[in-house]
View 1 (cartoon, rainbow, N blue to C red):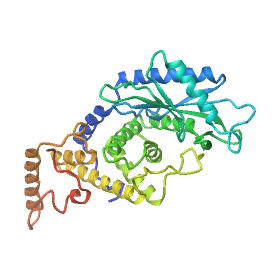
View 2 (view 1 turned 60 degrees about the vertical axis):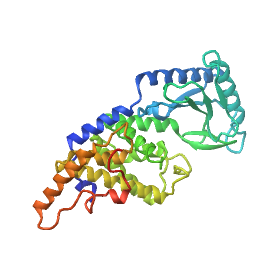
View 3 (view 1 turned 45 degrees about the vertical axis):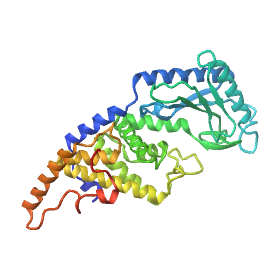
View 4 (view 1 turned 135 degrees about the vertical axis):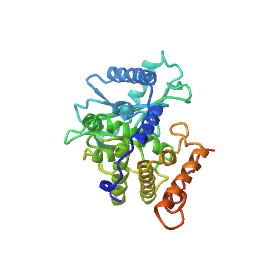
Length: 353
């Protein structure tokens, strides 16, 4: 079934999905505390590198953060008037060490147990606050990039161990914010749901890969169910062809998959998830809202976010559906767990224990 032939989304199912989205949405208290810590780091970097500019990136900057909030992303673009840093020149380590020490000094009074790590890091300085912004979580961290402008082209040079890579995180944030505006926030809401799906299904993709793929397919206002359909269909098709290229056209390499997943396995997971989602929509539009909710619960695999219906409610609606199928055909009734259900193919749960 093509996307255009997919059944129209159910208002009841959209309501269930919206309630689930609100449960995973970052709280205002988490955001305020995270921004306070991010601003303290920005202040330290501005003082250490006069004339530098800072940028924000990641879930807080993009408006799609989940709760519990565990980290924040930011960068400083350091002036290099003599062009002594960059590919074939000096590496980023001296700049990173200066930045790390500045962060330690500036934040020590407020966060005395702070730890700042540079050695062995691929790209970012890691700031461990050892003080969570969400009480249920163990810690809160910041990933800090020390970058320089690329004098010969678009974007920045960002660290790669003791060398440099091209990237354009400032453009990435601008592209995401434009998508949020153009879709009347649909983009951010669908991405938030997808990030949670990713987190509860062994993380086949990094968050940036999810967002980059969404930039191509969620381009106007849609329902969340329609947005999920669009994304799963597009992501499976694109990743079947190859890894996702940098949306800004600057990074020399595509976005890598998480190391525990092959591209074949990711595509299979995406297609299985699309099948479950489309079956949920089919059930909802046939009037079987309990069975539709069960499929959505299977998809997101998180009882706290979107619980399965009770076993008794599922069994009752299975029986109703079997009777309806029997009355519309002359053959034997087909149970929901039989050939008409994608569940056996996707190894999903039937109901909560």
